[in-house]
Image (cartoon, rainbow, N blue to C red; front, side, top):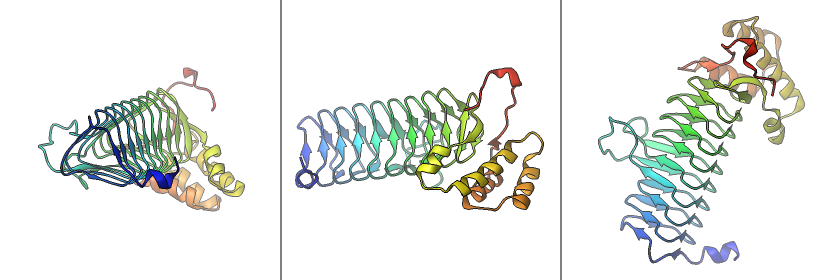
Length: 278
């Protein structure tokens, strides 16, 4: 069926339960046994497949919400006392089976946010007040604690766990079965528990049109940041003195300098821990 035809008619299965306050866009598909609670907005062209549950959420256009996904239920925060908070999800985001996205606790902007064109694979969990920027991919069973911020285009491997309040930088790639209590540096690829950065995510940078010259300079800066020869402050001073600056180097430096939990840069394990180069 052509997209224009889809938008002409909304299809709601008779077994679906929809709260009177819900706002349903054009061309929306709502499947069997879907429950849409209060304070929900569904954008045009979004498909909500059987047995999904949604409340206190704004869903963008042309999203797909798979069976048994739960969006907007109460946060797992003992301080939450029923305040009016919500989830906001952008356009063209795919939410697979058994994903859970909790609405925010009563702090910050009272919102849990997922950007445009994200892919949340089976069983991933996004806790209260998290922010996922555009084009983030969470593989199966990724668990984000409250207030985690995931930057543009980051990829997080399956069965990974992240402490509340950390940041995963833009275009970072984290291997499966990882865990971290510290921030993950942008544009890097990391492996292990914690996922120590082993190099730049060159593939993602190249795909986004970042030139060889910029990638080379950024890689020089990255190698100084992880070098055992310098502490982080010394490395930053050396970068500023010796390497032509670009927006990606500036972003890495700012990311480090604004970190509240600290940034994972170097392994604290013995060299014999078995982690090879990526």
